[in-house]
Each structure stands twice: as structure tokens, then as C-alpha cells.
Amino acid sequence: MLVALDYETKDSNGASFQYFKRDFQIFSLSCCWRDPKTNEPTFWFSNDRNRIAQKLASLARNKDQIVAHNLGYELGCTKKCYPHIKLNWHADTMRLTQLRDGGGDMYDAPVLTLEQEIAFELGELSERQVKSTWAKTKGLSLEACTYRHLPQKYHSHKEPAHKWLEENEGIKKQHGRHLDKLPYDMLEQYNNADTLTTLLLYESNVKYFKEQNFDWSQDCKLFFNRAELMTSAHIRGIKINTDKLLDYIVEIEAEIAEMEHKFCEMFAVELEILKENRLVHLWNHWTQLPKTDRGKANRLKKLESGEMDDEWDRFKIGSSKQLVELFSKILGIKHQFETPKGSPSFKASHLNQWGEGGMILLNRKKRLLVLQQCANTYLSALHDGRSHPSIKISGTKSNRVAGGRD
Image 1: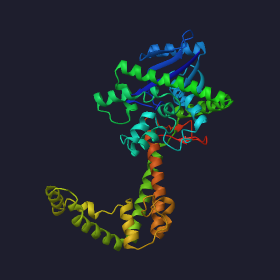
Image 2 (image 1 turned 180 degrees about the vertical axis):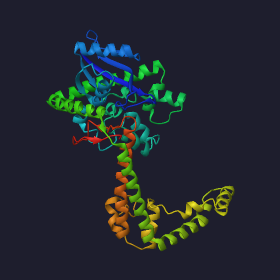
Image 3 (image 1 turned 90 degrees about the vertical axis):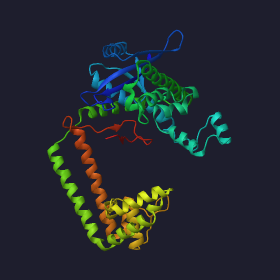
Image 4 (image 1 turned 60 degrees about the horizontal axis):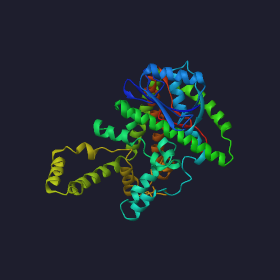
């Protein structure tokens, strides 16, 4: 039997996707399949850990074909929480959709429903709203894939749960990180909707490939092998010498501080002019921005009291606005590269246009990147002395694996 499966997971801090952690657990499971007699979707749901273990053992024993969206994650969760259970993984709808349309890149214009087209023509839907909706249909998330390949009634299936979180828990964004707060009935509805759309998406993709006379099974085998290796590596992690790493972080911070000091010394005279210009700007423009006289008076009071001294006196080496004034206006260097908005560019690959000062900034950016990577590794290793780099197993449209959250 073909069964679509989906977990909801958490750790001691709430809903979590970091299945390598010791306190990580599966807190609900939904399964969906077609009834052999009626062919109607049938569901099984539970948030009881013992019942979940029994259900997974039953699926493994019966060798049911398991379908999931983002199989790499569901596989990792199973390995971590139920390492003795070996499910018969059959297909990943994320990977199948990637093979089908490359994550939606084939759509070079918004795909609108008839209702949206009418609303757009009547002016009830702005161009900005259309583009925002279009952006949500790109990628390989379950919602985006559903939008592109399933009927409209299955779109936005997560909205009821998200709306409940907003109204009852005050959650405005990253709703998926708060699913453990949902009441039982809402969690069941949410989890079941995920497995239903996964099942329907699988059927849609398989039907499409059959019409194209395309055999996806070989790609599937290669993909499963990759997922097996990468999830195991993610759980196992890489042992880190945190003391040595911390010493290296301190060294990099000292290097960056030395570069910043050298830069400020090189342009000491120009930076004084910059500070004076900023002070004039604060007096003549910043104090006049508020629309009310009271607002203007409050800003003037802040300047007179010295409250803004640190703000105007401090040069921010990472501020493109201040760097534009320094290099373009004060030093008079003509730039070769611009941002899409037409401002002088301080992108890493364009920093050589600013001469010796630009090269200092480039080296600083490189060391900042190393510092960030070291800091992320150090934080990741704090709980067990290991780093657990997250990697998107579905990869990019060119089939390269891509770095994930860590």
C-alpha cells in the first residue's frame, strides 16, 4: 500500500527541525492513503509517542511504500527517534517536483486564478500583491508545489492553523516553529492536510511523468542513497575542538580590528570632514523630518543635550551610505560599478574600484565571513561538542547540494 507520511517535531525549546539534538522528538504523525475499496483518502493521526512507534513499526512490517515531501527530513527524524525502524521509502514529492519543473522557474510570469485576474483588472489587487503571490509559488516547499500542480481548493492548506496561532498566540511569522502550541484538533487538521496534499502531489507528478514517458525510478534510487548518507552524517556531526576554535575566533577578531584601525588612520582627515558633514546634516535635515512641531522640538532637544553625540561622531565602516560619502563625495573617486538602484557599489567583487582603501575593506569582508562561519560552528558544537551542518538534500535546480540553515 502507498502511504503519505508527515511528522511534526520539537525539542525542549518548542517546535524544532534540528533532529540531531538529544532532546529532539516527534510529537505527531499523520498518514494518508487511498482506501482500497472506495479509493477515497483515509487518515491516521496521533500525538501519542507509543502509538506513533507502533504505527511506524506496522508500516515497516507491512513494507508499505512511504511517500513524503522533503524525504531527507522525514528520514532523518525516523533515524534519530526510531533507529530500529526501517521504513520502505518510495518517493520524495519535493524531488519529483524538482524534476518536473525545476522549482517553478519555468513560470516567467505570475499564474493567476480567474478570480485574481478579475480582481487585478478591477484594481482590487495591486501589481505588488500579484508579485508577492507569485513569489510564494516559486520553490519546492509543499505549499508552492501544491499551488503549481494541484487544484485551487488545496492551496493555502496551512492557513487555518496559521490564523489560529496569530489570533491565540500572537504569532505573526515563522508559524512552523510554533506548531506545538496548536490544540489537538487543529494539529490533526494541519498534519492531515500535509499528508493529503503530499499524496495528491505524488499522484500528479507520477501521472505527468507517465505522459512524458519518463522513468523517474533511477533518479529516485540515487537520491535515496544521497539522503541516507547525508542524514547519517548530519546526526553524527563532526567533532570540534571548541577551545582551539575559540582561540582562533579571538585571533580573527583582532585581525579585523587591526584592519579597521588601519583604514581609519589612512583616512583620518577625511573622516573628520565626514563627521562634520554628518553633524550639519543632523542639525539641518534630521531635526526637520518630523511632521509636527513637537516632533521637531524633541529631535532638536536630543541634539542639544548631547544624546546624539555617539551617533554622529561614530564612523560605521560597514555603512555603505557613509562609505559613499567618504569615497565619492570627499575623496572624489569615480566609481565603475553601481547597485541596481544606481548607487555606487560596495559589493565585495567591486571593492577594488576604491583603491587601497577598498582592498582593506575587501580583506575585512573576507575575514568577517570566516568569523561568522567559525562562530556558527562554535555555537552548533556547544551542546555536544560536535558541529551538525544542515544541507538541503534536494539541492538546486542544477542538482548541486546547497548549504542550509547552519
